[in-house]
Amino acid sequence: MSDKQLFRQAVVEHRAKGKEAGKVFAFRDRLASRVLALLVVLVLGSVAASCVVTVEESTRGAATAAGDESVLLLPVGAIGRLHAGLPVRITTGGRTVRARLSAVDGPVRRDGTTYAVARVPVAVSGSAVVVLGRASLAAVLVPGLAR
Image (cartoon, rainbow, N blue to C red; front, side):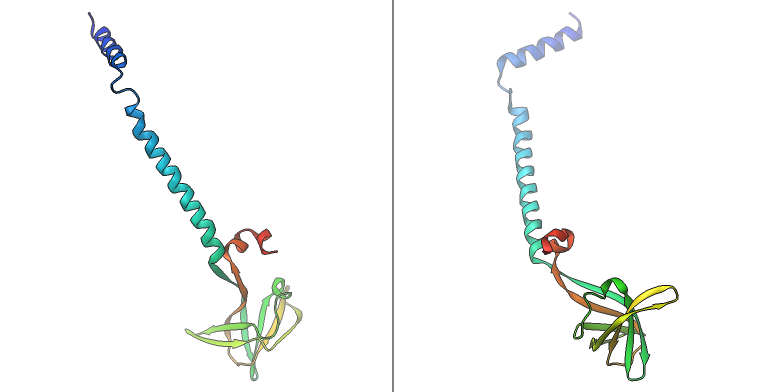
């Protein structure tokens, strides 16, 4: 007999006995079901967390001191959401000044770009961030949920 026939005979005997049949795959089935259960738990946890976790919606622009106030040049797309009383952070030279919008003016065109103009009662020049609101992470990722 050749080695090929002996190997084949051993396989046939192993299957005929049936002692190990199915046990080789039982571990893989159990592992697959545990991995699937873990994946389902992680997905459900992520969906729940995205509904609870909130993120800040903001717009940023330049702040220029003008007299006793600062004039903010912000993206014109934010003009519909800007109103007096929104919190503003103006960063200049490593320090941050916090204030609230005192007024929102109409759009202005400068250097070929249209900006929304807002005013803050603090005379500071630098980079300005206006906080438009807070929304759940799910509403930001899936805009249809925000309605």
